[in-house]
Image (cartoon, rainbow over all chains, first blue to last red; front, side):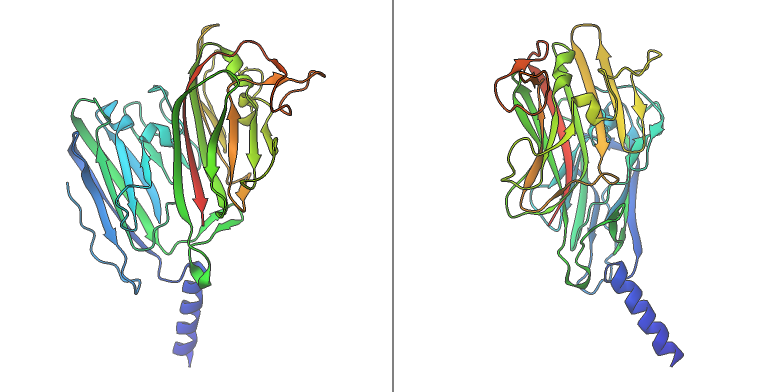
Length: 59
Length: 286
């Protein structure tokens, strides 16, 4: 019973906050080269279920 | 959504780099900015170490950063490249965000799809043009059928004299709202909560307050260079069926000596000349 109540609270919180878990993402480049060519820093995809695919970074 | 952007490296290359955000698989990036311009700075102004809630610069060599909330619902690709004509250089850059974080502008929620709400997008509108004296410019120009709110705007120009600053700023809550709309600034400096052509004293040429900042002001009694920003999270501007923000290169008095409420005709205040203008407008729309 307590477990079900906790799950309900989590679901409600997720719904209020935007419909899914709060989760950080991001990346960076350290001492890279910037040129005329457009380079990808971040290529990030959310799944339909809210699950996250790994960040693909091109440096 | 994104929550943080920061860049440094060779300067001015990192200040002027072309940063693109491709939202939800779009082929043309809907967000394309120079870091300095995103932070409301133009003319490669060298002021260092300043900031407010949303953006700033933490170094005297690069270090522009912002915390702009750019929502996305499937994917986000962020790229970087040199500004056209710039020399190759080094770069340090970071971008990050949080999934499912709500966007709130000091009490005005930006809908991001929760509980069936619309899904807002961030639009970055830019203008780069030469304006004739007394010409109008839509800094924000949203088409009928859209709704949303303004997050931040930046206006910069170089002009023959300070009279360009006489330009009033007006807000139109729909695409069909008639002139003069809602008056936002009785002159350009007034829109940035200053006065008298930025009479800020002590030889100062910059200021940074919670929602407004003067980031570049050079006036030798003749030609003027100017840039400034304003965030609207504490002073929200809503549009319900399109709408926009309008600025003018100089302005006019009516027959009673009042300004800002005469759309055509009138008496020009001073002698505004042509102005080379760059503007940014970050707008949430849904």
